[in-house]
Length: 122
Length: 107
Image (tube, rainbow over all chains, first blue to last red; front, side, top):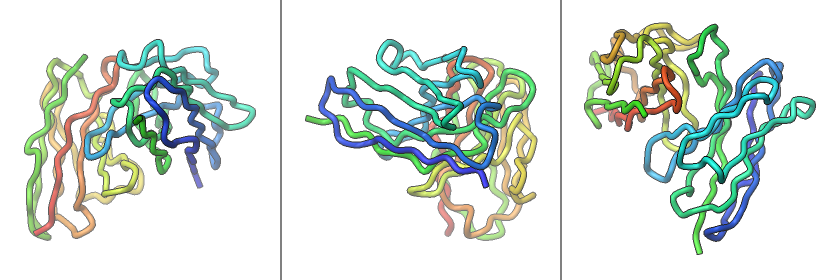
């Protein structure tokens, strides 16, 4: 069974930092692109960042560029999101998601974690 | 960034009804269009990928169509468990973007 379990969320002051983790099991983690997708309370979904199978390529939405870093440790089947200079508008449930892995350039999120809530507030 | 616009934003339908949700892209995205279903407090679930391919394990009452800028998700016979929110997502151009969502209520 494919499982993705996020951790590391919590309450942080504006300007602070937080590191999210996502532990994967039930599949060959190193064979898949992985993403972080967030959802502000009562709002829609927003893709945040993704990372290639071997960690050699990272992409970010403009609103987090220079503040967030996505990384992975394939030996630990783990995905990370280092978040710094946090703002109130970063408050959201953060999901890690697996790319289905179809041929071509598209991204299809076939498995998601349960999410971890990040609250940025003073 | 490519903007994705869903309609309607919300709808109410009865069990057994045929339901259609549309998604329009601000520019052509070929068939790089996916549909997700999300129940309150839960993670989204992939229903349709590449505009019309049914994800494994998803009931056949769900179908998708379209290409270019206009896409449709159809539920042929609405079931009680189909309530929740539906989102389209384009992956033609980085960054991936989602529609604002359609909330489906069962009458």
